[in-house]
Length: 161
Image (cartoon, rainbow, N blue to C red; front, side, top):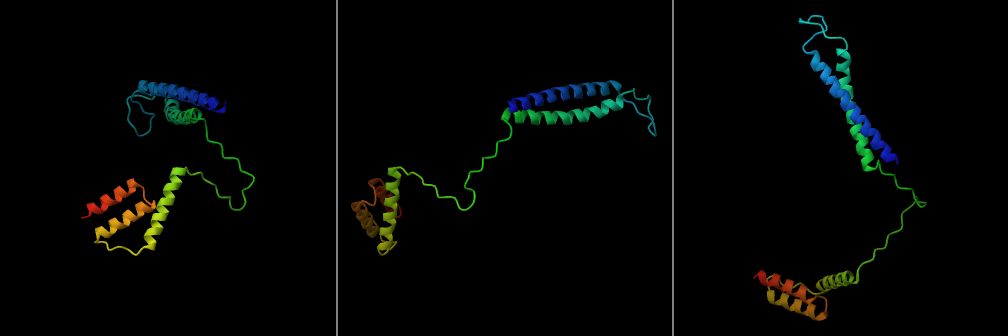
């Protein structure tokens, strides 16, 4: 209800300020070229009320901008409410536990075992693709690599020849 009221007030302010700005502009245009006296040479004096319309025009434009902001805030639902403080705000928060799907967990375990196997073995010479392919075959046989991962790694090794 509060946002509906804010949008209504904003729309009303916007419409009234646009009407006042349009009428002020009309009155100033109708007055034409005039001067209020002083050092300026003019053919005629400004009609009564010209200063009032000259002052009303920028004020109504500023009020229109305010109306646009009120209307936008009302249509958007207003400012978001700050979250309510929970009863345990002092000290470190407990760690959250995340559920990991079984397929993703199995993939993580395979990657960790692949990393461990690579760390345990002495590094094969980088220029010896046959030794690298043999090591890949051993990892495939041990179950550390899936056939798809094996094919990708084999393609990389053979592509580097």
